Image 1: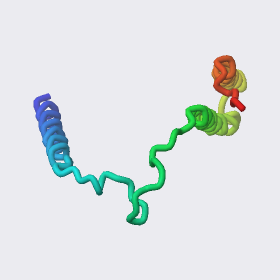
Image 2: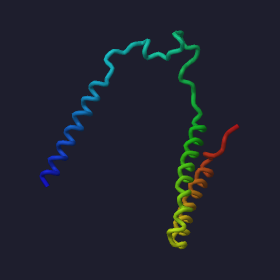
Image 3: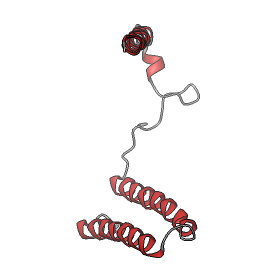
Length: 117
């Protein structure tokens, strides 16, 4: 028991020391105007580097990624059909698809899938 506690304390202490050293050593002490400005072939930029980003586009991209990952979870279900009972496989598949459809309905109902023109 003491060996586990000692190992835990030693690991925690080393981790904290490394984190504190990394925080102290990574700080910039000199802030230079030239280094913090955007670089465009040595000239001052013509326009702002901070252009506005469409939040609608970001939301659609996140929804796409979520459903893309869920498709990756659906693909192995066809392989597990051969090794499991048909009743349990059908139940799990239907519950998973029902949750997906409820999420899609919620996004549709909230208007997140409407692209304004």
